[in-house]
Image (cartoon, rainbow over all chains, first blue to last red; front, side, top):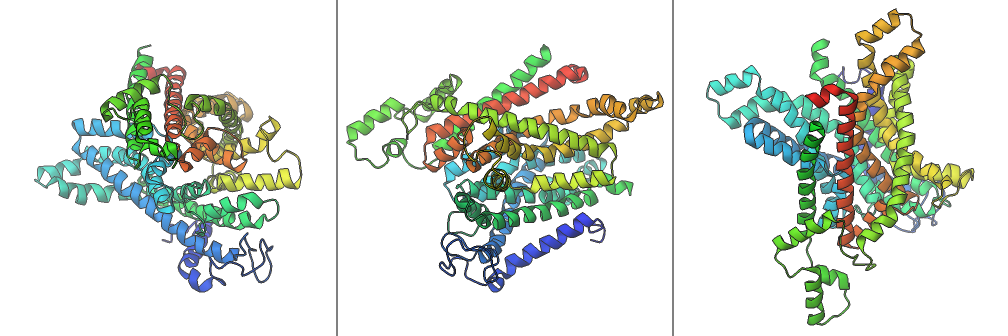
Length: 274
Length: 305
């Protein structure tokens, strides 16, 4: 932990992240107004002492909405990464361990999935499942599976050749035990780094789908959807897009700063050098 | 030549499987296409049956699948449910807008990303490196749609330097910057790592020992070799470019394939969704193939392996 926070970037990132996590947990108590209560102020009222971030078209308090937005972004980010990670990593480990023909077909399947640019794959999944925040998050999770599978397969392939796996096999350990007790712990740093580097991306990607109108629908206080709603009056009320966008940017930046540092600390090659 | 044929032979089955996945995905959508096409207009059973026969929907799925592949290979995707125009015509109409945006974005992102990456990598761990890498991370964290709105607010609405809307060359400036910054962040990080790698090679030490100036060594010896590895990752960059184009078209209310795709998903216009996805995946694979071939041409060791 102390090594993790050794750089100023990581410290700033961790502090920001803490603020967002607190905002997400405490939003019902911190928010001065209900996020969906209309006419608590004048339509498109500029930011002021009573309404720090101003008000939207329906007279809702933007500060309360941005605060609640932290919940959606963090939950969605963790959920999508979990989907990509669980399915991608299991697939990668499984085909690498099985080897031979299964591995060859598995690699081919990953290549086919990688044949889609992630945004196109995600949009296709939304087209099939229907529009909505949960479906958009699932789509982003699915779009991330091939990348996770490819990297984890590569890492697992190099491990499978090593002596300790051969030794475990020679002592008669069952495949499930080898996967769980020997392969997975050794892949953990790779998987953690991948997950943390992908988290910011996942938050951004899901917000992007919401911005396109394919994810969270109004009146949900999700940052991407709020930006989409604010798009039409940026001329008259720039604060309707300024604050949700800044919140999204800072949240993603915080996650990326911590993730970047985490990857330096956990990178097995760098660890052996220091 | 053998290398070229090998790469081509590997790409074609992937393209076919990708298209098959699109076909399966769209089959999985609940609801009858003819009902969607009619959009609630009452119609007699004969009309519905005739329409189903015309679209080939009365055939078994396997036959439909073969027809789909045969038509996709000829770039025939049927007619849009909404506009009743051939999907191919609609795609051809929108493609130039997206291509010019992607080109503009590639120009901005490529120049900015490689310059910053080179500057950062030449003096790793210096103050300039730290500043550039923080900026690159910020670039990766920046929501493109938010950046686009800020650019509109400052340069179009505020300063009035460029028009807010429109499709002319001047109106392409802000969208290109928006798409370009998507690329610049990740490209700068790749180029930096590659520059550090290249600068530690023996030939760079030799060049320095010969007494060549730092600028000449940086450009001729480090820069040239350092740009090859990131080139191979341009395929991934192309995916970022597509994502950037989809978002940017919406922010700037520009026409284009991304805007058409999003609209088609929202209005359940599935032939259009299918057509655009098929075209984009084909373009994506073609670009990746082209990069592989380019890489083989630059580095003969790859082609022979």
